[in-house]
Image 1 (cartoon, rainbow, N blue to C red):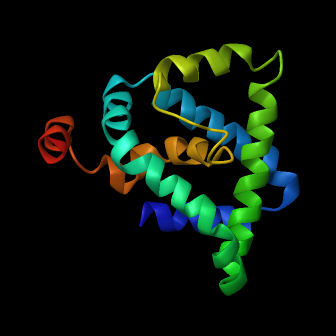
Image 2 (cartoon, rainbow, N blue to C red):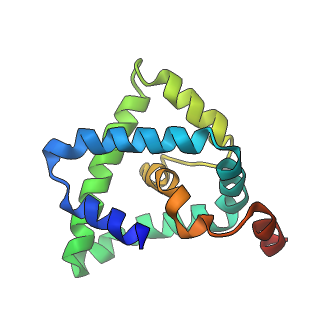
Image 3 (cartoon, rainbow, N blue to C red):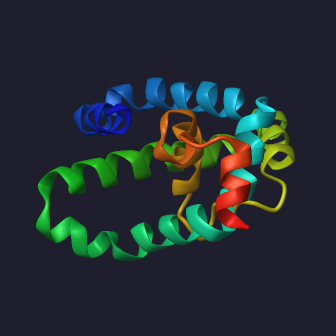
Length: 143
């Protein structure tokens, strides 16, 4: 349910509220990047699940855009916000934040390949289906 509500919020965004949403993304990513339990779960799930799912969603987005108007709204708005966040990360002002994220993710991210969609996945990670299992359950499931 949390993901549904978050998606509805994104669909309803208007351009004047993009900066506010980007600030929310930054806050969520900061919480993510400073929570060792979340980071451990992310790193365990990244290669086998998060990366392939994110890449699949990104690569098939053009097809879904044709069939569902809400997905078109969601995609264009989250993409615009992720690009604003990317611009921040690439700026002098965002250097410290970029370092924080790089330390948290280590080698478990590929923002460019997902067109920065992984930032949205990480920002919503604490409320996502990915976070329903404990670290021990994830390790048992994977190994």
